[in-house]
Image (cartoon, rainbow, N blue to C red; front, side):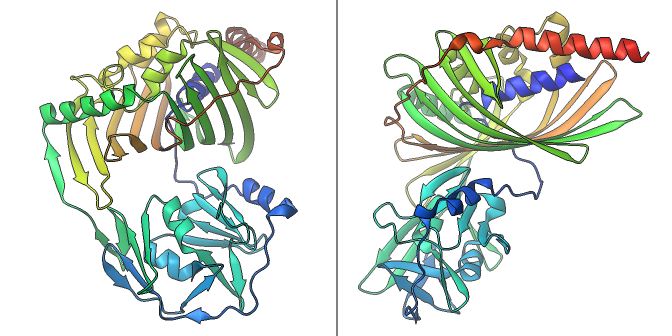
Length: 447
C-alpha cells in the first residue's frame, strides 16, 4: 500500500512540475495565501468614504446587456461592481469568509481579501492593479465591491471599456447568464482531422523555449482490499518555471494538501533541475531522482503530439473559434494505450517488471481533454479530466483526476536555480527502499 502511495506522490511531483493539475470535488478552501496578503500591512488600502453608485454604466456580456441592479462604483478611474452582482453576471459561485473578510470566487480559484490591493488567483498572489496600488477590494456603506477588469481577466475573459458611452464589454466563449450558457459554434473533427490539428499545436509548442505555468490540482481516490477501504484526497497548487532557451532549467513550488481518514496534512515542496537530477525539498525532507528534463517536458506537456499523443491514442475531437480570436480544442483520447509512455519513466520511479505489470492493469475512462490557444496557436490553458481504476495485489484503487493549467510569460520566463549544498539531498530510491523495509518489518512483527 505504502509503495503505491509513494509512486503516486513521486509521479505527481514530476508531472505537475510542468502542465498537470489535479482537482477533486472537495469544498475545503485553503486561505493561507489570502491571510499572507492581509498580514502584510503594505497591502492594506483604505476604502473611499464619499464614493457613490453610478447607474449610468452599462455592462454587456457576449453582446447581451446585463442589468446592474445595485449600481456600480467608479473609483481611481476603475469600475467596481457589488460582489453578488458580479458573481451572478459571470455565473460564478460566490462565498464570503466572514471572520477573515475574504471574498472567494469560483470554488477558491480567486480570493480577494477586503481592503487589500492584492489577491490570490489559481494559487498565485497577484497585484490587483499594477499601475495603481490604491485599487483593491473595497467596502462602501457595508457593501463589498470588486474591481471588474481584474476579476474578469483573471478568469480569462476579454474586457473592453468605451468611456464615451460608459459601456463595458466582457467577452468569452462560455459565460453562464441567467442560467443560459452562450457558446460559439463547434466544428466536429474526425480522427484524421483531430490528429492534424494536434500536430499544428505541437509544431508551435516546439518553438516555445520559456514559460511559466500556474497549477491548481486535486486527485480523489479510494483504496480497498475487499474488507476495508480508505479514501484519500490530494490538492496541489503551484507554479513552475521552465527555461530551455540556452540550457535546460526548471524551478517549481508546490503546496500539497492531503486528506486521509479525516486528517489533513499540508506538504510544501520546492524543487529544481540541475545536471540530470530533479532535486525536491518536501517540507524539509530532501531527495533527488535522475531525470532527463527535456524528455520529462515532452512526456508531461499536454501539447506535445509526437511524444505523448500518437495516432493510436487520438479518437476524435472538436474546435471552437472564440469571440476574442482564440480557439478551444477538445480531444477524445484513449489513454489506455499510453502504457509505452509510462514505461519511459519507469526507471526514474524505480519500478521493476512486476510494477510495470501493475500499471498494465490501470484502466482510464471518461477522458476529456481541452486546450485553449491564441491566434498564433500558443497555449493559454490546458485541462483534462478522467476516471481511473487499478487492481493489483488484492488492492483496488478507483479515483477521479481533473487537470487545469494556465500558461503565462511565454518566451519571457527566466529561471534562476538556487545555490545550495546538494549533498544534503538523499536518493529517492533509498527513501522508498527504507520506507518499504520499515513497512514490511512492521507487518512481520504484527503477524
